[in-house]
Image (cartoon, rainbow, N blue to C red; front, side):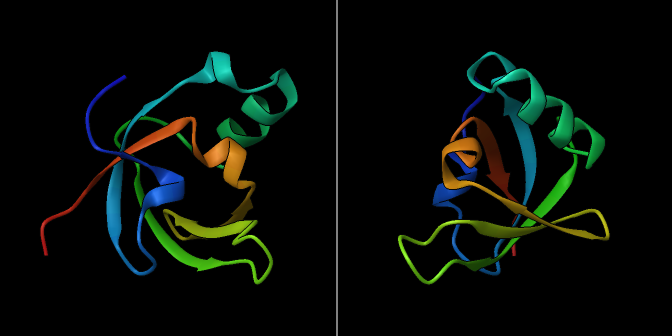
Length: 84
């Protein structure tokens, strides 16, 4: 996997680019869902909120869409924070 940090570790409000996605770590249905929502390498992403219990799920902005994603799935996504 490319450097950066995992999406579940990205601080709230920080914008980043998706560096890599470990598709093999995701089940087929989840991988298809993420692809349908536009998750792919190079796509802009921003962490918006974390759930109140266990900080799960995460709300992230992908392009112009807000998506809820389980923390376990977010761990398969490497992101590179954008410079401020």
